[in-house]
Structure formats: structure tokens, C-alpha cells
Image (cartoon, helix red, strand yellow):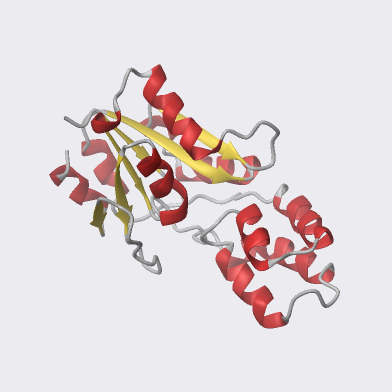
Length: 209
């Protein structure tokens, strides 16, 4: 019996670029200005596109950012925040119909992720909200956060679902802990091959619990 569901935020409950594609433009500008020929324009554009799906540290490592590029982008991203209301995906109302405890676990810069949660006005729907802050020391990572949730709430892996869009982040973390994983295939999300289930809308979760 499913007693709890752990959700990701970006591209799961709300599109990462819902507020505006301009949200991360200061980050991209800082990276460009510190590039100094390290990466081609084409690679930079692919890296910037990845920033809407993966955290900045992962993108920087994947595309070979120089130390100067990483530091410049990092400093800009640490100050980014959403200042206007967000609506999230149209099916967010389904969260209120789900039985059991709901948890929100999101990775990224703390200020930005907390501003998104505030702009969506959804914190009240969750038993706990965790930001896996990449800009803070002693970062726990999603797998450890998931494990801590299980331990603190007396849950076994077979009593929990992990729902998210990223096969290499929350889906992988859930799999490592033996938690049933569900990839939600929002527009633009590439289907992975490591989730137990695949859904298009949150309402479909009712069939799994």
C-alpha cells in the first residue's frame, strides 16, 4: 500500500521556464563573458538549454565549463529568483486528491527554488518541503534526502512513490533505494528507460496507489 509520494518540482509540477526564459539570462551572460574561447557558441547554447532540465553544476561538468565560467555562472545563479506568481501545470489540483503524505524535493540554488515554491503557493500541500541546495556546504543530495524521509516517517521503500521528470536525478535516486519510480512525461521531457511507470498527468497516479 502506498502511504507517501515524493515529488520533484521543475518540469514535474511546474515548467522550469514558466516565469520567463529571461530568468536565467544573467547566468548565461556571465558564462558567455567568461568563456574566452573555451567552448564554441553551439556547445554553449546546448549547455544553456540543458540548464532548464538539470542543475547548473551538472550542466557545467557535462559541457566542460572552465573554472572561470563555472564561478561566473554560479555567482549569477545564486541571486536568481522568481518574483511573479506561477501557476504550474494545469493538473496540480490532482495533488489534493491523493491519499497519504506528500513530499517535495527539489535540487538547485536555494534562493531560486524557494522563490518558485513561494510563487506557486503549493507548500501547504506537502508534509515536508526539501531543497537540495547545490550552493550550500554539506549538500545531502536527493538520495540521502529520500532515505531520511523514509527513516523519519517510518516508511519502507515499497510504501512510497517517487515522481519526477529526470531519469538521472530523482528517478535514479529512488531506484537505488528500492522505491517505485514514476517518470512524468511533461512536454519536452525525454522518456527514460529506468522508471517503473510512465505517466503524462498527475491524475494517473490514482491508478498506482
